[in-house]
Image 1 (cartoon, rainbow, N blue to C red):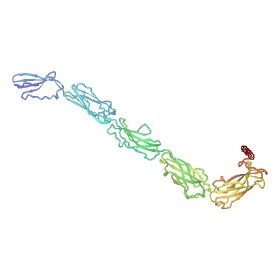
Image 2 (cartoon, rainbow, N blue to C red; image 1 turned 60 degrees about the vertical axis):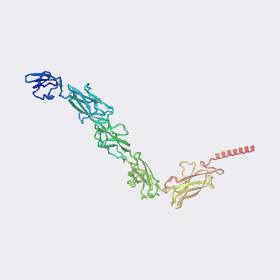
Image 3 (cartoon, rainbow, N blue to C red; image 1 turned 90 degrees about the vertical axis):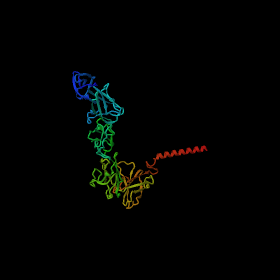
Image 4 (spheres, one colour; image 1 turned 135 degrees about the vertical axis):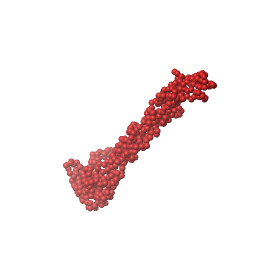
Length: 543
């Protein structure tokens, strides 16, 4: 407001507030300047009037144009971000979290009251760029902010500042975050190691130690699964728990999940599980005879399909039993361990020559590499005499003889032993009619006792002469040790059989089973004779 101050002795400055004029200042000397502090003035529209005076009277007045005084900041400020997945944004501890893609949208709203609003400014949002001001011509009271390249994880402090036309302003902050990345899980501590185990469950802990969401919204819980199962199991926030184990080589996976449901990369552990006992088969050992000496090698057949047999912890046991019945050897009265693994030798101190007729009892206590164990069924093996007498051969010099005192057949038999033997066996020649029934017994025709040492060379040839007095087929049997006085490994090979036939005087007979009957022989002879005669006749005619 400019006035001419020539010849002015005083200036009176007044303010019009719309209802009356109020004096602001009365200036009486140069400089004619007044600094008016408007901060204490009520907001509104005003005018100024200046009146000049000399020593005697008023010199006139000057009026300013209307102007506005605005000393008040915008009020009732509201600032919000819409639809956070977690939190509200009012503080760092209540940050508004979003699980949105890089092309997502963040929607901010605001409001304020002021008679002279100018515009609103939003800063501190995910880059790149910043939103345009809202106002002053038009107010949307909202920003839908997107860049097309939001980062996968981060935090920001969104700042809103609202201005009026007098440049008064008010500000507010919102704490926001984006998290689309899962957290890292800590290395688990396991109740079993990398070796085979027979455990039915796995206990684990420590998933929370060293776990981190790397600046994200924070870890909510941990999960576990067997890789063969598509379903994850929530085991809570403690970082420990257990899972049932199935047989086989299992891969157990662990992961952390944040408060927005983002699952992190899994860490895994390989667990080899065998819950099945080993299976015992039979035994492999030589024939047990009284001539054995030294350590006898014995093997048990066993299998374990998964972890395999733990030979170091598999033990072999033996004993001697009188009758081969039962699970406790009654000669030794206890089980005696003789080795580990699947193969071992029996003690060389066993005197096998004293064990004839007894049974070697064997069992194995099996263990696999997962500590499953099983005891094999007890098996008994009889100790046989080492000696075995048998017939190598026997034959007659004639199958058919004329019955009577001249009907003599000679039988040659070869007796053998499986080892040099100095004993004296008895040998008998017996006969019986071939057409006998069960009531007819064998008749002993001759018994010989071989001299001691006859079988040192393991073979003895005996020639027998037998007179067939009556017509008919005759079975002939030669028997070793008919009284069973000699203990042998096999008593079933002590007999040998031949057949001879006594024919009526003037006829020739053969024994059925060795040659065709007489009628067949005669018919065959007639056929051959006729065929030869016909062939000769044809040949002569041709010539």
